[in-house]
Amino acid sequence: MITGIISAIIVGAIVGALGRLLVRGKQHISIVLTIVIGIVAALIGTFIARAAGIADTNGFDWIEFAIQVVLAAIGVAIVAGRGGRRSVTR
Image (cartoon, rainbow, N blue to C red):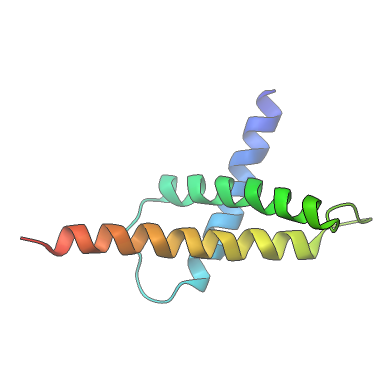
């Protein structure tokens, strides 16, 4: 159980960081929020890959990983965009 949580955090951090790198400009969100977005993107990406039948390959699943990173980039862009609009209003 604890190893599953630790792995989710590590994978979430990697997926979230790579997703954040794909988004142009500076994102004013915390690393914790980036990890949470990465974890959610990894879960949704795995679900999509399994539904499409591409998650059961030998070795590392590059297509599944790419889906996860793209979803993380979308998540980071959405969250950063919402945070940016709120902080501008004075």
